[in-house]
Length: 133
Image (cartoon, rainbow, N blue to C red; front, side, top):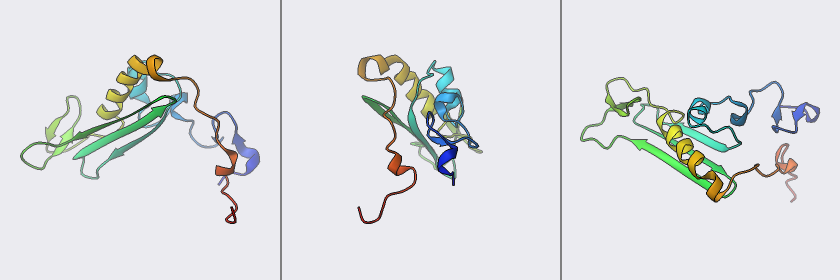
């Protein structure tokens, strides 16, 4: 847990932790860079333990989206990346094809529906709230 004086107000996280995605680090950072996205985004990746599906959910002010890749074949098999396909030893993750699809769309449409900075974080959420509230 971070002490109050350790918080970096710009990124709202501890200085000894990794920077957020907009700083170029994270499980979907390569997908963002490949689509030409360099702005802030709130996002979450997800992958089943057996690589049979993967998802990416992200939003910016005015625009939200989710992509989901799953096995719709006649047999249950793991999924592999590049290209997305059934395979014996899966390597599909939410930060791969699902994130690339999201960021490609986001880069093309952000100016039409939203963009800009994410809202400031309510500091009361950084350390919890009084249970009497």
